[in-house]
Length: 270
Ligand SMILES: [Ca+2]
Ligand SMILES: [Ca+2]
Ligand SMILES: [Ca+2]
Image (tube, rainbow, N blue to C red):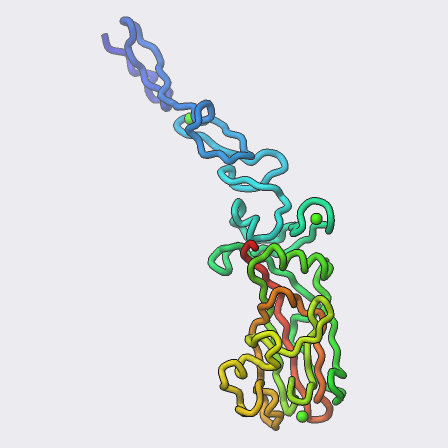
């Protein structure tokens, strides 16, 4: 006996078969949601579809359905495990309770896609330094957007790496030689090393590689002459970050400079 195939096109993933001399509709669809033949995440719901299935994160969770996690993660690197779209998200590095969550930008593609927590501040633009000469007479406080230093300290603790770019462009304006400039760590320490140099070194990056403009000094700016120079690099000791304050001196009259301080970026899980 052969079945009439008139309705064949309307049957989707079902077929007509003969069983005991009569035609019956036999469904070929597998209900992946019934068995364990789906990859929906632990915090997701499965919906069977003809020939396939779909997953959706449960209420209170976020993700693509295959991986779902809580809306508020410890950091962007933790969130990256189940969210791949960059954007502003709330994080809570010390977990529920304690310090309140805060909003950061999660860059999900930088640093090979590990999930980078990016925190902005009010002093990111290149800023002119002039008007006084004594050591540290110029002072600039750094305010991080919508977040306290203790919240940022907790972010550095749960992250394996943190960094902040720092640059000083100088014209006859020294940094460490003569003790004119320094920066203040989050716990109020007076920091006398520049980006790209080791903590406690009293140097800039060029001083670590013996490539400074004047080999007698550890920073290009410490040549302190009438040539525009610069010292720049990444601060990476996460126990000192973020930068709370910038201090400069040797900046009156023709002694002048510009400072630039990057956003705080933390990534990896400690
Ligand atoms: Ca199915
Ligand atoms: Ca908390
Ligand atoms: Ca000078």
